[in-house]
Image (tube, one colour):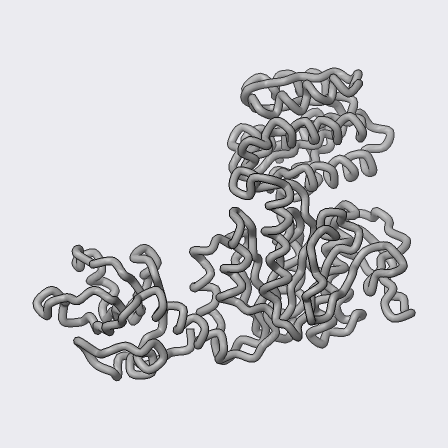
Length: 459
């Protein structure tokens, strides 16, 4: 955070100094007690603090509050700023702080690929710029303030991941970050427990259109059917389309699998460039297209972006190919699971599993609410259409996937388990050097995570 004196903050939030000194320097911000991690923090709160002892290690502390404390209630090393409304004071400070920095700020959302795209952009820009970004997948609204305050005088660009757990999450992130570039990677079906319907989820992702600066840039996957349902007619900025269609501004041609990644030709403004992106799957090409489009708009040439992208390190457990039990090949894709990412994983399985026996191990898809049954049936459709030689599901709800795939006409052997205990015994019997196993789940599914670890060949 760019340091501010109490005096300057009081001017920003129209506060009155009740106790302490205007010369105290503020270097951190918080709006919840648990967010206080350092001395010289300002806490915006409308709650009365009773237990000062637990905060003593963070003194000197600055408090911006609407509570009227008596003087004997406030410890000596606490500076008290009285405000009429703590929430209004907080947002005045947030808006002021963001206005201090005229830098490119990228916001990335999407059902799949948002973390990878954000990290790719960060990787490319960090070669010659000081960059602030969200930490891996930590993108909840409670973290927004800390990410905003990570911007200081030295920051030259910022990239933030704006996830959707509920309607309004992207709008709220926009109040903090005010992005100059927005990216929607794709929209599948997820978080329907709070968004209620697919239309509600699409609308929640579509909030990106409203938060990008009116003179800014919106980058979209032109071939994603749900993204095309977003109303963009009132967006006054520049829309950049990425994909494989000839109408795309950044177009991928001649897409092909190579060892450890994807190769393709990128066509932009009648010029063609050769690109390699680490990580398997055509979806990774779309991530790379959005990334290159974003950094190009920030002044990085396409040849330089492609050169830097070669050294990007993809995440473990994202379609990670490793040696497995009985000399089999394992595709560990236990980072997350949606129908969008499942479809991508099955395409990779079929592509690199040619001439091999293909085994798919699928866990439960979470955050679906009343849509759980329907979405798991859709996953069963994907399995049936893709075709696997053996299907194994883990979890009570995941069994819906198996049942529906069989109902659709899947004739391959199908096994359903409540947990991973008996799966390893089965796999030891059916996998060999001619087998490729896709294990697909999310980072919160312990049975799937534990099984994935056991499937790896011991070094």
